[in-house]
Amino acid sequence: MHHYIVKLFVMTVAGILGDALVFSTSRSLCPPEEYCYNITLCPDTVQQWMQGNIPIICGWNKEIPMVCCSNNTMQLNNSSNVSIKDKQSRNRRKNPIRLSSISQEGCGRGQYVPPVKVEFVGGSDSTYSWPWMAAIFVGNREKQLCGGTVIDDRHILTAAHCFDGRGLNPHDYSVGIGDIYLTSKRHKIQEIRLHEDYTPRYHYNDIAIIRLAQPVGKDAVCIFGEDILQEGDLLTGLGWGLLSYGGRSANKLQVASGIPIVENTACNEMYQKVSNAAFPNGITDDLICAGLEEGGLDACQGDSGGPLLYQFNDGQWALVGIVSFGHKCGEPGFPGVYTRVSSFLPWITQYIQKSKLT
Image 1 (cartoon, rainbow, N blue to C red):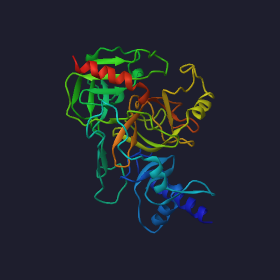
Image 2: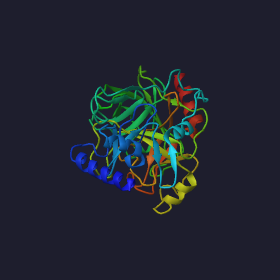
Image 3: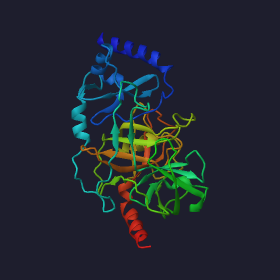
Image 4: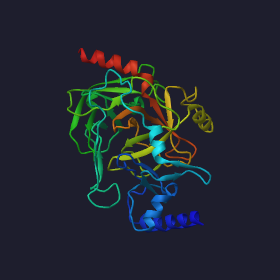
């Protein structure tokens, strides 16, 4: 009976709010120590809402609101309850974990600005700074081509496929850094280096490094010195891409939090259902799969090259993946696929070391 009341309440709320919000498929980061979940998985939050305590709405899964849960009991199904606090303690490991030699001291620090009044996350009163988030543009166009991530004061990681058919002349591109609205200063590029084993139209070795013409005073993200990820770890994705497959573009940086890692063998079985001409060897160890079984949390067109992030329990962020490909966007049964950064750490380190000598 209670489950029926919860569903009825959620459907009523969705009907009231759905017409009022433009960003029905957008996602925004929750405050520290909270995660963004489908409201039907957060019965305590529903109960509080029914009593008039409006929660933060961090996104939508079709017509169902996603809410920020903290220290509530997250109901996964009718027979098992898992504490979000327990899930956090399993997911977020303590720092220090060995970081790579290219990670700068104090890396991976953003700043959460809590709302000054109760309203939906995504408004101007609630935001999060991502100083290492980069947008790659063709010339001075307003719409970005791809995303990227600042890894030190002069280098940005992105996806190699962003440059398919466009050439590698650095003067044809520019980069904006650390601005959620794509209005920041544009930075010139000195060099674009694709991985030597990348082949256009294939999804393997889909990684590139951009060297900026001048150093930038921006904070960089951290990079692990080893691969510590486990199945089920919750990750965060960023991008300005389409809000739905074939839909409109975002004019504000979108944040998808609580994306679980999917084991590669299971991911490979899922993708065998579609044409694998672009990845004939299947989902290899150099790739990460992440997404919900029911879909809804995923990158989309325009998010390519952007970061997949892991957060330590002290709030520090590390880059673990680069948006590479997927089947449509947020399609049920098909997680997003990302280039595994740790697999290419020797290549990244070698390039940066040589770059600093010139």
